[in-house]
Amino acid sequence: MADSKAEKHKRKAKDAPETDLEKLNERIDELEKKAGEFEGLWKRALADLQNYRKRFDREVERIRISERKEASGILLEVLDNLERAVENDDGSSPFKKGIEAILDHAFDSLLKLGVRKVPAVGEKFDPMLHTAIEIVEGEENNVVIEQQRAGYMVGDHLLRPAYVVVSRKSDKSGEDATADSA
Image 1 (cartoon, rainbow, N blue to C red):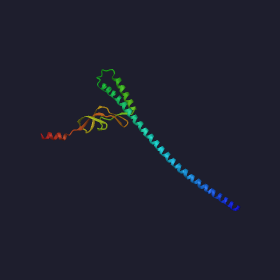
Image 2 (image 1 turned 30 degrees about the vertical axis):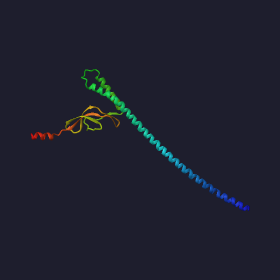
Image 3 (image 1 turned 90 degrees about the horizontal axis):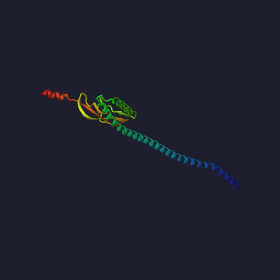
Image 4 (image 1 turned 180 degrees about the horizontal axis):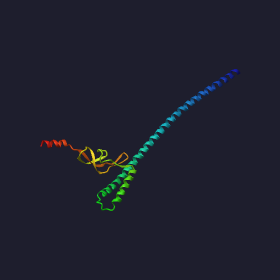
């Protein structure tokens, strides 16, 4: 009987490492599964953070442009009046050169803020950038021939359109036909 107890004990000793190994392998599988779940959660949280940063950056840029547009728009009204004063000066005012210097400095400052003039005279009429205040007969069709008020952009955003005079190609063949029939 003593032998049988010893044999049982030996068998338990042999089976014990296998059972412990199985338990450890199961525990490893369980922990790897949890680690995979945590990794997935971490990746989603990281992606959420990156998306949040992008949204935040876009919102900051939108607000920055909006503020530039508002401040520039107010300043442009003052500068328009100064430009009109310089244009209408008959040369007798001693302040003309000073006002011109102030205008140049103000427009340079606006340029540093990203505000730039909308191209107008000689350009093809673009209703997204120009407002036609008059259409006149000319040699070319749909070309800006005069600017009444400058337009401005902040970045890619229109601050205000340019007020322009646009040419329309005259239809001389219709006039010649009426002259020939008379």
